[in-house]
Image 1 (cartoon, one colour):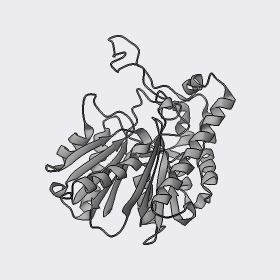
Image 2 (cartoon, rainbow, N blue to C red):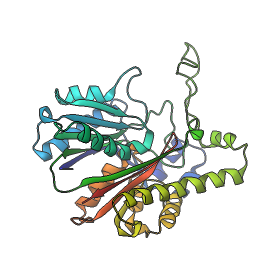
Image 3 (spheres, one colour):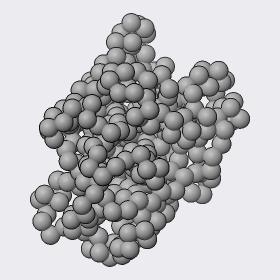
Length: 332
């Protein structure tokens, strides 16, 4: 990775706006988030992606016309259905000769996009330069950014320009675990081919955390076992990625996880055997969860803060709906 660019929505203190989203304000405050970022209605997902991409390109000194590949990872639905925001981004940037790839694996797409980059570079030796973007723009008509999940969703995009021969911030390995038994979590039941939108019908909403309990027959013990499984698989996928490069988790300078709540990040750090100071806990609580943009944003932050030395190994890890668990190892 040669350069980075990012754009965030306007910051808002969680304590000031939580009542706009939920009656259970106390529960939301217990997550530990101090602020989130929100965009005005006129700003779309692709607007954010373009802005972040242009900033990364400007910093790199590379023109969009020199790109061979554009990869866009998204969390929420884009501006339109039957539409490819990655192809739209390619056109808006003027990256006329670049292949465009869309990754829509939810929050984990900001990790698996690196494996896609590495794969394209391996199978297309003529590809020299690429752009990767992670973006989240919460569609509040369908998704309650504070009440649907135990993460508080923020709007942002982050981008990185990639050069095949750049000596630093190089992809080393990726690992993914998929468990399709949980594919129905958070689905939007109306709007697809199974149940199309109909005139006069009420606006549908995504299934929320309470709906997940239905999957477990409202058995708290079964649900707790699932939470334990989720955290353990984060550990497993990080360990597997480390083994691919001949390293151990203890060799990692940083483990960059999703911008999750305090309890979840604490549990995952304990499972991995790393101190919280080597994770992104403080960034998470200060900014909120940016979906597929989390890992690029956090990596950019750690680099700017001088937290990462040359040659150090960093793991980008987390989970996303599907369910998928993923980890990518980057050498600084």
